[in-house]
Every structure is written in C-alpha cells, then in structure tokens.
Image (cartoon, rainbow, N blue to C red):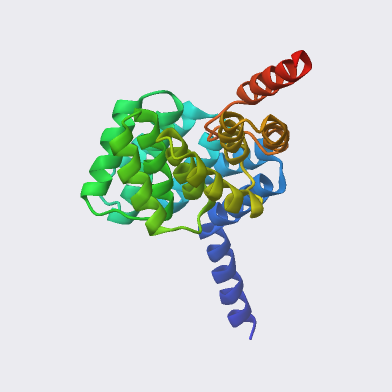
Length: 250
C-alpha cells in the first residue's frame, strides 16, 4: 500500500511538472479577462518560457498585440511562423494575427498580401473575414471593398465586427439608407467595441442627424480602446468637439 502511494505521488508530481506551463497560462488568461492585463501578460510570458503549445502561443501573441506590446507580438509570431511542424490551421491563425499587426502599424500592402494569400489557400473563418473586410476598406478601392464585405456579410451576418465593416462599406459606396439600416440593427445588439458607434456617428452626421451622432460618439468613448482597436480616442473626441462647436454656433 505504501509503495502504491509513493508511485501515485510521483506520478502526480510528474504530471504537475509537465503541466506547469498550462496552469501558469490559464492563470494569465484569467487575469487578462478579469481586467489586470499587466499581471496577465507577465504570467503568459512566464508560461511561454516554460513551453506552450503553438495554439497557446498564438493566443499569447494576440494578448501582447491587444495591450500594445507590438514588438513582443511580432517576435512571437515570427518564431511561430519559422517553425516547420506547425499544423496548417495554427499557421493560418498566426499569419492572420501578423496581418492584424501589420494593419495596426500601417503596413497595408503587406497585410493585403498576407490576407489574399490566406484567401487563396481557402482559409475561411469569421475572424479572417472581419480582418479581410476592414483591410479592404482601408484600400479605398470601392469595387474591392464592396466585393469583400458583401462576401464577409454573407459568411456571417451575426458577427458584429463584420456587420460594422459592411455598414461602413455601404456608407463609403454612397448607400446611406442601407448603411443606416445595418447600423440600426447592429447598435440594437449593443456591441462592445468603439468602432461601431464611431462609424455610425459618421453615417448619422452625413445624414444631418448630429444629435444622434453625438450620442453615438459618447457611447463610443464608453467602450474599451486597445492595441487592436482601429480608431483612437482622440479621433472620437475630435469629432465630438467639432459637432459640439458647430451646434453652439447654430
């Protein structure tokens, strides 16, 4: 009996040792979600040093990117992509994450090339289409952004980021009433990202409804801004200041 107990204890200790990175990783994810990103990132980095799966490394890179650690995120993604034993799906996720990073630093051509390569390889996910659609908007090519965002919308009409991209693309194409209709449905679902409210405010201002545009800007400022947010608080504040100033002059 004593021997069995010792064997079980050794096995338990061995299991804990092998899983030590997973426990640290899980604690890091919990801290990031709970609202302490600094502590969460520290734990995720410790877990990475102990050894994580490629899928966990991709998520760790995303956490670094989300909280503004672009150089760390890029380094981690580059290391992953240099690996020769990555499963195709994980490699595609890492390439998608790298495209998001490139969009954040203004490398539009590089991001476009990466996303179109993924598309040609048949990679289709909601996150892919959300990024692909936004990239298409940044190109300013109306035919291109229309085709991409219509396809993305058909792929997943329920995703709020895709709906935001679609509504904005309609607005840029001059289809104002259609854009308002999309945004009315989107805002009713209370999205938790600032772009939806800011972009709708742009549509409303163009339509002459500055009062409602102001409300949307105020709601935009209530959302979280992060390293993956495609607008800055300064943009929202500047537009809000301009609308307030114009209202006072009238």
